[in-house]
Image (cartoon, rainbow, N blue to C red):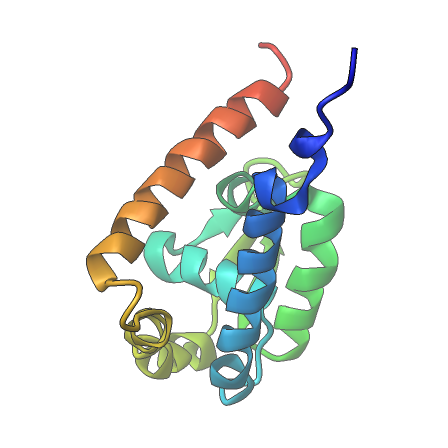
Length: 154
């Protein structure tokens, strides 16, 4: 019996278009974020803080699906740029609280323009803004399902 290897073709993979789209979208973000002197991962942390204000390291990690060993150096760089402050909780000194500085709050006024620029750069004659929004909704569902599968059982 002959084996069907078409499942291994790159165009039949779910992982490849996700990987390629992620890389390409990060490249589109780069010049916009360079103007703010931040990287894409730093932008993600700032977006969490702009939305939720003061957060613990664990809360940020949970929202961004990042482990603390990935997040800690990122937070240190944001602190060096004077965009966040880190302090130990008075209630439990094992907990580190992250909050925005005035500089980061001011940066939000420039960053608020980025999402519309990104959506317009993705849209062309073959992909509409509504298709992009539907795709985002599907991706969020997929992320939720994958995260459930990968999370340890409670």
